[in-house]
Image (tube, rainbow, N blue to C red; front, side, top):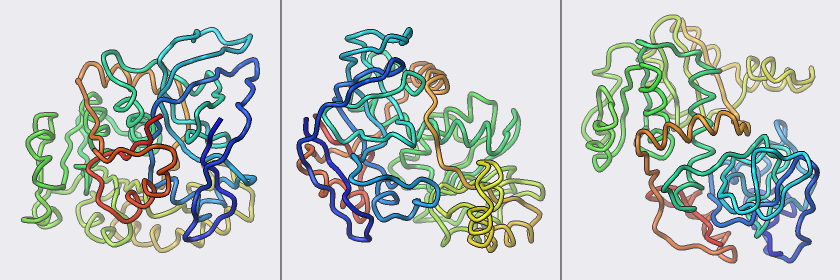
Length: 333
């Protein structure tokens, strides 16, 4: 089969498409014929080696973190899936490989695709959906009636996080582009700020939580709208001491992450808040909950219209890294 592989970490890395053997499954795995795989900023972080302290890979490694496809074989202990099922997943962190014609996936990471949704749109859900779910439930401990702000929330993450937060009974404010305003207000957003016209930090009352999708350049503004005792969760800025403790990392990594996250922790403490960082993991059970939300709220994640095949993987990565995609960038099989 064909697969796109990373041979070495480097800032200007390129993936190589080559023939490799079709993977063999263990008793707890299923073999999935990939129909669509999403390209994410996470792929850039892996390829450059930016997250190797969190997860280092023996290379060459087949890249790709989320996919949709059809089950073509099942292991002896698999009980929840059968041949022919349409499934999707955020692959386990230790065993990625969505940029390939076939992938072996542990059944614990899989879920059936949402009803009446095609492979392309389904492939755009798992990573952002699980990030939102784990962020709200596990990292923030959010509760009904509390408030949240998502700067840059008009993108693919916000489109998943908003309905999950609304289902939890939260009040959600968002900043983003003008074209997404009506859609997100219809999803239940309390306040929408067009970032071309207004500064949310000058108008928004303090909130219990902020989810950062932008990175360090926005951090000071985000802290301006955080209540004392609130938490800020970043998808972009990097791990800290709390992240190392939560993941039970060894002493040397804990020391490194403590130093790396010190400035973020210090700034958050100055406003009486806490800083958190998330690195999303696979979880088929949580993905099934997200599937129900997608079906009930009729969520249709935005897809970039540029057609990419596996041979175009480096062009797809470039669009994610330096372009302005109009939704999730997909590799079509």
